[in-house]
Image (cartoon, rainbow, N blue to C red):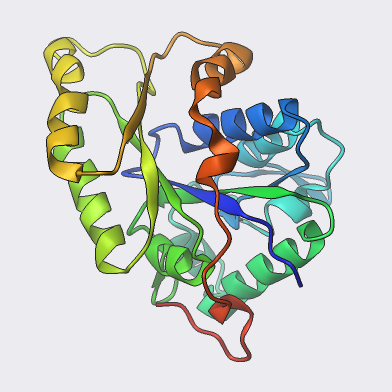
Length: 253
């Protein structure tokens, strides 16, 4: 199987705008004439409709690449309760194993391998959010081995969260393609000064890892993609350096 190059969009926390950024990148690459695969291995907070699901994040990714893709090819594992996937699965009486997550990713990448020139993968929650029993998003990132795009809030607290995420990724030997600071909600009183200084301060600490953008809140999907369009996303995507994910009996970490 030929695995396309890709990016793994991860967050410093939940609600930082990962889907918004991932969908914008997919929209940009599609607009450049590339065949773009989109994948969110696990999603929670979905709504059951008859025998199927409505999943806001998955549908945003599908919409970004032109639609007409079955949801299960984009989001292999879906849960209704808006909790960490491992918790949502356990509350159903069916604990989620790392093997099940990895198999979902293998199957999805296998389907996309003949249909995509580049992959945009989105995580869930923060970088150390529990994904399955004894498995975090960071463990999946290690198994997948795509460069990380870290999405962080623009306001107060982002220095700590972002630097911890970068250090966590680097300790695992992962590549970091860059950092995007995103305002994921309307402005908070007193946060303007933090927003004005965060990018410069982060740049002092993360060395060659670039602060690729500072994104406002008041943009629709198309305008948001335009704000990210100058960043050469295909050139930042890379293939996995090894294929442990597809080895027999592979485990994360």
